[in-house]
Image 1 (tube, helix red, strand yellow):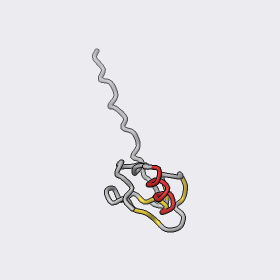
Image 2: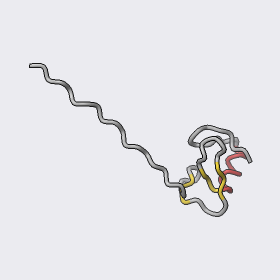
Image 3: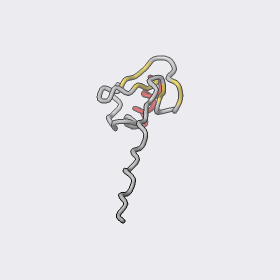
Length: 66
C-alpha cells in the first residue's frame, strides 16, 4: 500500500507593523523616513544614523537616500 506524504506546510506570512522601525527594533518615534524602493518606514533619526554608518534598508538593501 503506497501512502502519499502529507502536503508541505508553508511558513506563515510575516506582517510588519507600519509603526515599527527595523533599525532599532521598536516603535517609530518622531519624524519618519520612507525607503524610496520598498516604502518601508523608519525613524528619521535611525535613518540618519544608518546613512552615516553606510547601512542599507533592512528589507530591500537599498542605500539610505537622505
